[in-house]
Length: 533
Image 1 (cartoon, helix red, strand yellow):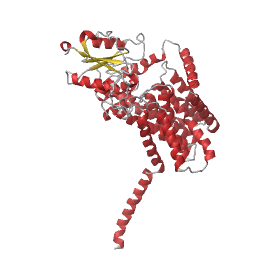
Image 2 (image 1 turned 45 degrees about the horizontal axis):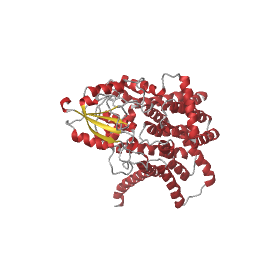
Image 3 (image 1 turned 90 degrees about the vertical axis):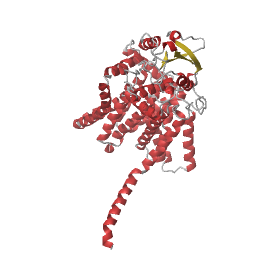
Image 4 (image 1 turned 45 degrees about the vertical axis):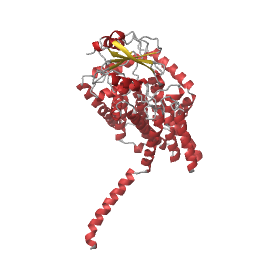
């Protein structure tokens, strides 16, 4: 009997052993920490973005513009042809996926924002582990790490941007890249060829969101290439270069296929590269613009002394503890990223968010310094609770959104009220809408309508430099192409006559803007019955 049961016992042992190995692989301590950090990310982002379900609506213009582009992408509109905006297609792809979760709101955007923040926190933790043996300190640094971005966006410069811009998504990918660059120099034996492939993928993802931020990679790549050539490892360099290019091309290739199939590659070039030049004052010489960028950077650092201090701490830490190649790459990336961020003529608070990547190593430096004094001491549960509680409270409290009028409110925003009116009064199964003479205030989002006008908003560029959006919108309104038209004005007596609206349209409602747009009055017009198709 014993002999007959042996094969079954061996098989059972094999299955048990396999399951144990799988359990150990899936439920490693690091994976448990990653799960905790992910939950933490989703929690703090409940408070730190207007995309969160705790806020009535994300009324930030840019986020609504991205949502309109993403919604259009998922509904057959051709990017840069049927709808025109100046950011990259990967950003619109993210917003398109978010639209699948919530067609008239930002819950899907919240999910992606929280997911990207969790990625950045996890990789800050991994970067800290390269310099810090004490797991508790490394974990605390990871928990603190999103605070500079969130406080920068909402507090230090006094703005109430709703969140969800390309700079935030790019920041997370740049932190992942920073980890692999740091791994290459600090723990070379663990660096693999697949990590170079990942770097190529990350580079292209950022390139397809906000191309100027890809300069972050150039300093490190240049230092690695020079180091390999100096060491006589040219073949090794060529192999890694090929793998990096492969990762980059495989990421870009799907969009090239899309652009070729829709014949929109030329429009992509015009909108993504040529159009964005208008934000850098193209009439000014490169030397003068670079000098202006330098002055702007000095002012920025002077106004945020904590950031400057952390930047210096990180630089000193790198110069004292890291290899020469990493020192060169780190310094070059600081200079290139500062130039890319400040080269623009529009200094919105959101453009500074990628700079917070540069203080990640400063956090690691402070952790390494603290480790000398903490040594192997085990913190009590109360100490851990107090430390984490203070970090969470400061991160949430200082972002300046919890006092926002859209937070935990039962009232509807102007966008939501207008949407109800439009959907009730429309004479069509597929109502059409155009918001004119301004940015995308969120009416397309709240109604679920996709505008048919490629220039669905007016960018922050002078009419003299870029007159096409104004002219296209005036033509569309004067010819009665839309059933509904919305225009925002600053005062009750600002008559919106500039677009010949009153000839073809009846003004049916006026609403006071809410939240970020509280200074505006939104006038809703409907095409007169005898002029409707």
